[in-house]
Image (cartoon, rainbow over all chains, first blue to last red; front, side):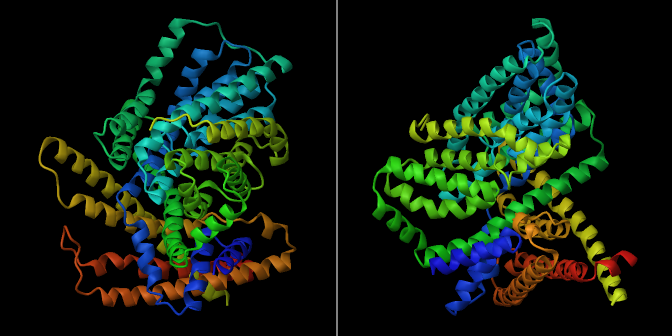
Length: 416
Length: 165
């Protein structure tokens, strides 16, 4: 059954059918081959979306979209510029730091790329930066969007693997900062080589000035994460609080959104959310099929019969994740792969929180590996540069991020 | 042919406008509801039914949003391989995937109506809401998906007729 399921799944995906429907249809093939009652289809899809923790998904997306639309990202970029713009290659560092700030507001890496790239890339172009380099750097920094909390893929993983969202979020900080750090070091190296300019002079007054302007944006992560980590709000509640706050800030404090725009932002975030929710719905049929024929444990036995060495298996899993990331975007790959890997990971005694960080990071890196590289598409549509030119620039950054992935896999930098 | 196609296009567009509005309403209600839930929990006594209602609103907004995303062509798909194929084979592949999707939608509608009839007595634990009304969104949204799919299918085969309309 496992073979039929996976071959039909990948066959259907290759016809260009939406992945959510390919997942549903391949499960349908197995169910009808075995003469099972197909009422499972609507029933499992209903169960898949009927969940309180999942409410966090639409509202973290919406909060990020609202703040990006309301120019909060531009203010964060200005603040980052005041902090580190005076170093050589300052704007490149601002790109990374700005993405890290926005990552603490947004739970999506494509949204982070768009939010930071839109105000910053024209600025970098004006100051003489090589445009493909600037665009590639922002796409690469965008991956941090799902590592530094909040993070939509982490919520998905937490629901599939049945672990705590708050613990995953807490453990996302350090790897996210590492990713940012290594991209900054690389930027300084490139800036020295290409003699990129430095910005204005360092001034504490300037920092304080921009801190004041960006203050309400910077307060968002404190509200979101403070609520979750103190245990005062559930992640779903804190996502809704973030939306309330974002609406308040955009409508009344910064006043850069009107009611009509609010309508279109809510509908568009609803579409983004529905793409993920529909994947979850049909994958619930898929996971029923997986469980009913014990397919994940069969795969686990097959893997464990090759080797029992956890280091080797972890490497193997990393390779599978990265390869999947080349052809699929994060949410679909996460939904297909997590239930398949969990039995192996549990057998080896790897901590499920640790594994969650590894799989999310591996798939986030997949957002910059062409041909399916959503962050690169976003950066390329902002700049008008071709995907090929960006891909050449992204390669060294990709290797650096993979090195952080391996470090995170083998050196668990975690708080349990 | 082209008048039927035009008619279908209009229906598909109107339903989409309506569903966009419904998506806005369900999402906004969830924001208000959960905000109220937090306020009541912190300052008064916790509401017993708000969590259940917001879960059902999530189900509704997910399926409503699915149709809007489908209409917009926003659902995640791997198209780079199909795009490499010559136009004729590409058209065949698209037709095949349309037919398979139609089968999936049809079966889902059939069995969700079956589920609707089966659930005539079941009520939700907190609000006492009849579950069949919650399940109802599945046949509704999948019927809308069928309309959008048929419209999309005709556009693949008769792109010119569509432009005239």
